[in-house]
Length: 131
Image (tube, rainbow, N blue to C red; front, side, top):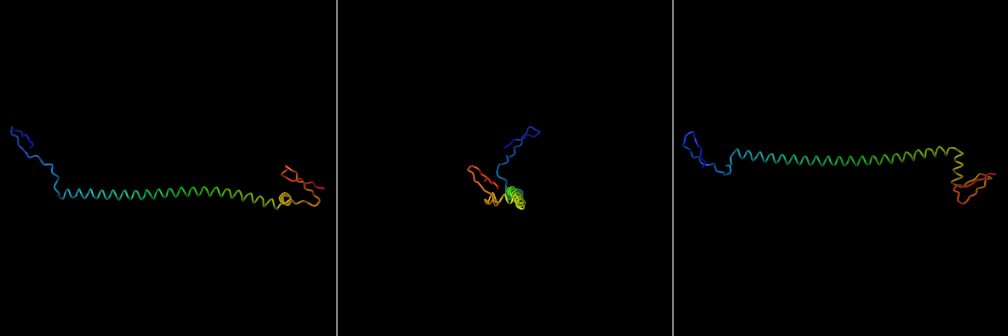
């Protein structure tokens, strides 16, 4: 019991409020429903964030893989372009009769009529002497 003093010398005794749980009523029910709705909304929001996060991660990984493939393709393309330019140069040289004769002599060991070919040890090229 609590004692409250009034302006007089007489004090009034009031019963102390008990610490009993609140009685179920419309006000407490509304709080409970509100908390439950907020929890459901929070869980749905968290699930949506996780799904979108996974989607963004997968898109970034796919993008990185594609960029890597593009770099590999660019290096292959540059190598093929270098090979193509070398082959074009060789085709142009093969149309030149002097180069073609020299190429056939070196590669297939042909000689002109009256020409003698000597293979010397230690020499990579063959020595030709014309008469």
